[in-house]
Amino acid sequence: MAQRNVYSSKDEPEDAQSPEEVLHSVMQELEALHQNVKGQLNQDITRLQTEKNHLIEDIEDLREQYRKLQSQQMESLSGRYIQQQQLWLKQLAQVLAHNLQDLLVQRFNELSANSGNSLSSPIPSGEFPIPLPPSNYDERASQLLAALDERIDRSFQMLEQDLTSYESELSVRLNNMKTLELQGEELLQNLVNRIREELESEEEYLENPFDAQDSYPEESTNSVNSVRAQVLPPTPAPRPQEPVPQPSSVPSPAPAKASSQVQTGLVLALSSAVVLSLFNVCLRILIKGKNPRMVFGLFEFPGVVTPGFGNSLLILLMRLIVVMALMPILATFLYPSVWKDIRRLFESGDRALWSKVLGSAFFLFLSQVLIYLAIGNIPAGIAITIFFIYPIVTVLGSWILFGSRPSTVGFLAIVGITAGLILAGWPSFAAPAPGGGNVGVGVTAALASGITFAGYVLLTQMAAGKLHPIPFSLVNFAAIFVFSSLSLWVPLSENFSPKIDQNVWPGLIIGGVILGVLTLFSYLLNNFAIRFAGAALASVIGTLGPAMTALFGFLIINEKLQPVAILGMAVVTLSVAAMSVERIVAPQKKAS
Picture: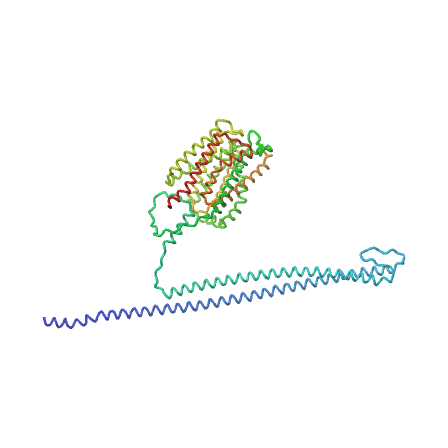
């Protein structure tokens, strides 16, 4: 026991010293690591300072070279202009000397000839009459000298005017060079500032390299998501998504648009609806009827082409020729990046997006041809009213494809649109069409046009967010132009082929130009209306299309409608407007 105690007493000091030694060694290693890292960072800082000084020296060299080049260019330009002016003065002096020599020789010849004549010879007429008596030679010489002085003065005045114009041109060019110099200095200053900022950021990082508090605030992410929600149309997803946690602090809503902008947008949307209604009435005038139509009650217009599928294709092609000639200019004005987006679309190779774009264009092509056929057979107001069946098909298609079940207001609007379509179309079946067209073909074509237009709307919603609306519209117009050309190039049967008289081609061309210009004008007004007032308010104004088409049809070509048809038109307009208003109010209720 005593031996064990002795050993234990000897081991205790050793056990007490070992942690201190370990701690001391760890501190020495940390100090060595600190010195090593500090030395490396000092070397990096020194190297960056050296590179910074080199960059500043290079920039100063570039500025010096720029000044030298500018001075050389100024010297070369001034020397060139001085040489040119000397050459002009030399040529002018030679011309003046030659003219003066010819004039003096001519006048002295006249003097010598007159001196040889008798005193009774008549005095010759001319600019400088020379009297025959020798006593008047001094007067004749003074007149010649005065004429010579006058001509020399006139020549020097012209020379002074030329020199003044050259001097003004030279000053304009020098001002342009000064402007370019200021722009170059500004670019160099921006480059220097940017390099300085990058170097300072690197120095700050090197001074505190272990500061790893890199944070990504939720506010920025939410702001990006809110911007995407404003840009992209709300398309319901086919499957449920997991809830995303929202931050505790709710950001304040963006300030509403100014009332003046909204009023301007509403006026533009109304103007777009007016232009579109005029387009429908002009199309009605362009198509022949049973009797010539009285335009504004002043003159009769028999029309250009008969209603038919082939003739509708031809009218659409004539209109699209004008649209494709002017639409690229209009698209570039509205959205300068349109060609970059189209090139990106061609380079992406996204077959799904291409199928949606071309599919929507094909449905819009069919809708346009069918509505032309409908307007040629039944009144334009009735055709456009029946065309408004597309909201019903769009709502039902969204319910089937996206699972977006319509609300109670949506169901009531569907019922109202259906009742209004029945009321609007019933008088057409009860009595013959005023223009002598086929009522069955007109109503069927209007219904088919609305259904195909709903397909265009659904495919456009599927492609929303992947392509800007303006490049999308440009590609759509181009595809419709191709479809129209191919449809007319392919041999059709006699019932579907175009039937055009050779004498009506000038009228058809003029009508196509008018329709194309009205199309682009309506598109431009609607685009600016959406920018100022928003798409929802613009769509509410767009529901006035059937009523305004009927009104312009009555005012321009005296196309009367029965009260039942007017009632059905009003019911359809109010129902579609209710759907549009609900689309505005629903997001506000969800936000509240």
